[in-house]
Image 1 (cartoon, rainbow, N blue to C red):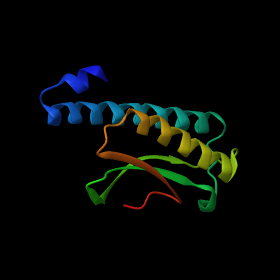
Image 2: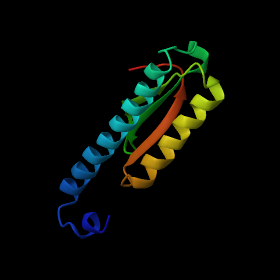
Image 3: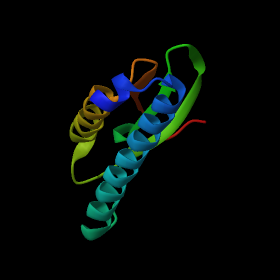
Image 4: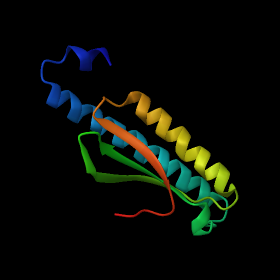
Length: 109
């Protein structure tokens, strides 16, 4: 993060940080999807599903899809916890205008 703070072009630093966060989120989501497929590909009912989103504090209308947590073997509580853990990890690495949040249910565009 020191490089980001010393960068004289904050827009470039923000774009670079956003790309890194999206890449980390994609890798983690792929890992969860692989784990679900490895265990038979079962999908939980919609009431146990949680979805992680990314947005900006200054633009409340924008919501970008990051990942869906729908493992039936884990149950609703574990899906919620996994979503929250990833949200905390990504939020800790994000620059201030970016915000991550979890919502119950599948992706809603």
